[in-house]
Length: 241
Length: 219
Ligand SMILES: Nc1ncnc2c1ncn2[C@@H]1O[C@H](COP(=O)(O)OP(=O)(O)OP(=O)(O)O)[C@@H](O)[C@H]1O
Ligand SMILES: [Mg+2]
Image (cartoon, rainbow over all chains, first blue to last red; front, side, top):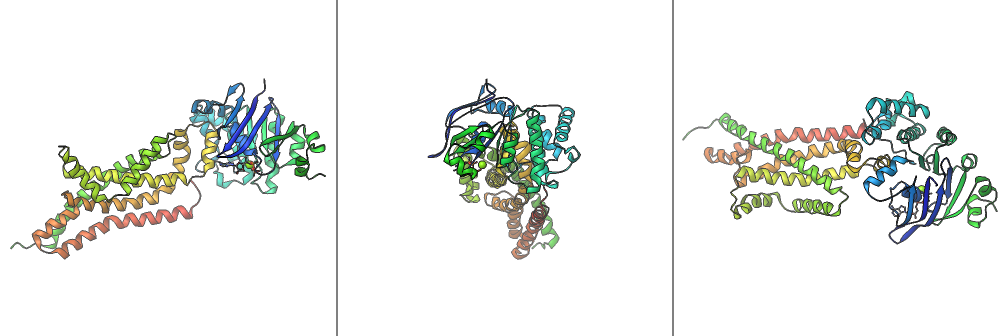
């Protein structure tokens, strides 16, 4: 059984069909890069998997549990799947430690000392345990994004969804975030990431998904997809002729 | 004819000012509680709750406070309910304040970036948890200046209750004028007392606003 099973998923905004029947099965430990032009539906797909958008048709199952649109099911799903956003979305009124502890405390009802120990451990993993008492606006973008990763990890998800997590960063800060993701991949975390970092996708990912106009247009191991694109759309996207 | 000194006048006015203050506090606090309920139903996932709160707010913002006072005072009387002036005054002002506070606060909640909702949702928080731990703490900061500013409107609004016979500062002004025949002195003092109540509030609202703008740091 696959970890994430996406079957015939369709999603429309009004009359605009953005996802036109997506099928994708993700095995445990896989690292999947989703590439494609702007507007091809990459973010929408990730947001559907996390229940931030409701799907119009089809089904999504995570670890065997169906994604249904009620608060109990959504919550159960979100405890399994974490999400990292382009804009970090740290809580500005809480310290770094507070950010990483909050949902452990209020969602999992973890006692404070344990939540703090977990927060420190996760911050250590992203190299930021010394910033425990800092506020988000005292950190660089790269550091903020690493805190966001630690915050998601503290909930012990079985998969992480990353939507262009380095796109809002200055170029010199991209590497530190990718290094953290690379390490997660090496430790066996299942990752679905929308990315423009082709070199990273080639090095780290087990499969690359090329989306075009709401469909999975091509899919395969990075060697094949990058070296030997089959469709003219992917060739054009990669700039090979 | 009895001579009234200015101190006699002032003393009587200040005694009545207590009721202006009590009524303002009751209206503001009561209105705040009802306003909070309105805020939550405005943000509810249930459509009928959103609609209910919306119509409530439109109704109370779209009619003069004076009419609301009349309806509370005379309208309930039609059903055989005898409403004392203080009760009608308190009730009308609470409901009226709630509509405005609910709307002010909704604006503040909506000013919080959508990403805050999404991040907290993706961490498994339910709607009430999102509100309590993520959205409201941030919205409260930006809500302070307009909320304090609105308290000035509440104080001025209490003056209208004199018309249904509630004895607060304005009503006392009329009573004292009738006894002293010194309208200019009396109403001048009344205005000064209102000013002394309202000005510090408007001023602090302005200062708070500037502070929050300058110190953009969110902690
Ligand atoms: N909330 C929404 N309401 C209406 N239309 C939307 C909404 N979200 C996305 N869309 C539309 O869905 C389409 C796909 O958007 P999506 O954000 O998934 O693209 P993307 O592949 O992530 O693009 P990008 O690379 O620019 O991030 C776009 O045409 C967009 O306008
Ligand atoms: Mg996108």
